Image 1 (cartoon, rainbow, N blue to C red):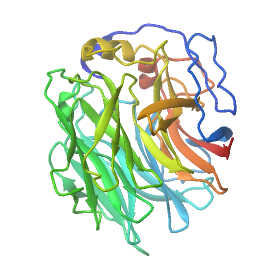
Image 2: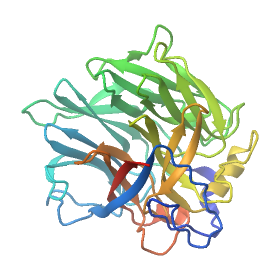
Image 3: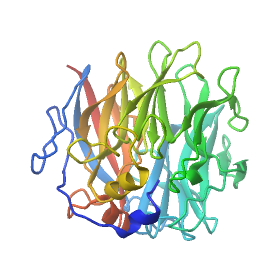
Image 4: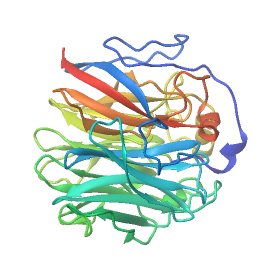
Length: 407
């Protein structure tokens, strides 16, 4: 998402990091903000990075605008489907288009569909249910200065058919963050409402929901109670199931609540997935995505490149002050892991990234232990940018191939 209101008028300059994944700690431009690397079971090697949007492999029906971000990918029926938001810049506006393309080789892409509503659309999310591919997207307003949730829409691609138009999933202020099919075939979703309160700093709470579905349309609470698993300042929420079925989650907390700013690192027992217990982390893991592999759970999310990486400092913090500082510091899209027995996040490495970056989606690669991360960024090899200048400039979509090998 974005930081709004008074933060738009402040621009400062801070040192920058240019990261790249490797077996060793990532190279740092000036050594000032070197994170502690805590590898788990795996060494992680960056095998390849290439630009996907814009690229020569896109179909002629697609016309990328300056800002390309909010990307999701899925493997479905032998193809990789990709949806992304393209617009004049990072911020809400009437000229936003959501494109959908697919590919058999991730080099040459076939046009599938596009959605333009004359208002902002973002947060594309795929889910396959009984052979039908769903694409969910959240609708917002057109003002850069206000966060205006306007519900969630979805389109479907039935087996052997063509894409439908958009239907309404939620007509209130709900935003869908992450629908996922877990290994045993169940479908889950995190969503949140109250998003209009994030940047007003009013103290009014947001609610995070954890829901399940058998058809992709009707979503009900996980467990016997209400679907709310966290109430406070949290919004974007990623999750993954460990090998034993326990759930681990990371919640972005951008609005002040009693536990402080930053994030929550959460766990739920496999027999009660609707009851979450959370620890506070003062780093803010924007646009989080999580996946499990070989008894580890990994997180890909935005990193704040400062001495501590904190969003608002230790303690309760002030959302307005934290937001002002946050837009004027460098960012990277980074790989982390969940230290499961301590319920905390440990840093692994950075992906090639710069300026405005990090809305990752991850699919398995062609080899064992290989994962492909799709993400957006300002030019990783271009002039080093703080976040706010990056939001105002061009951004592209990139494909990164990571190899996880036992240590």
